[in-house]
Amino acid sequence: MSGTTKGGLLAAKRNKQRHGQDFYARIGRLGGKRGHTGGFAAGAAGRQRARYYGAKGGSISRRRAKI
Image (tube, rainbow, N blue to C red):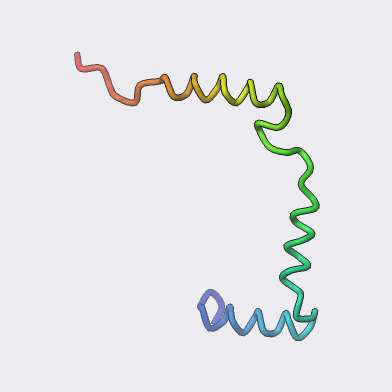
């Protein structure tokens, strides 16, 4: 039953039995705590960098030149 909706529900039920009802909340919390870089636009310099490269990418034409 692996890869099916029914199998997923049974696995979730088993995980909650083994590890407690808050199993998914706890593992989600761990994932949120692990990240610390803040992403591409973090900080003042990052915002300027994101603006610069966003404008650069947005100005590139996606149409082919008709020759």
